Length: 69
Image (cartoon, rainbow, N blue to C red; front, side, top):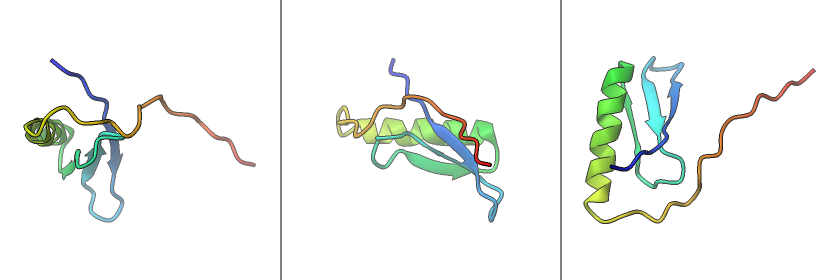
């Protein structure tokens, strides 16, 4: 079993949750709920893995808070 970290945002225009896996080309989707988003991401990743293990273009490191005056 492989584990991938997804970034999740909420689109202000559509109200949909948008998720993507950093560095994994094509691994992105959107949904109305977080549960649906997780299922969609799993489906997309499984589909992409049918072509073989991807060469990741980046590694997720974390987040930072940046304060601006």
